[in-house]
Amino acid sequence: MPIVLQYAVIALLVVFSAAFVWRTRFPASWRRTRVALAIPLLREGRPAWMRSLGRWIAPASALASGECGGCDSCK
Image (spheres, rainbow, N blue to C red):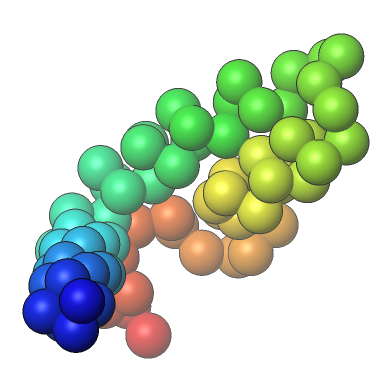
């Protein structure tokens, strides 16, 4: 059983690493994917937990945050 746990931990680390690279190297694609996942959850008639999950997934508005919505290299 310990070998299965080791493989599960390694798989999680690989997934988190890939997500980090995707988020930092391809921010426009990351943002589009978050929008595509959040919009169906935010529709009228969805349960409250789905709507709150959609708000959590949705990227911050570029107008509300004062940023361009692209990379963080302008800091």
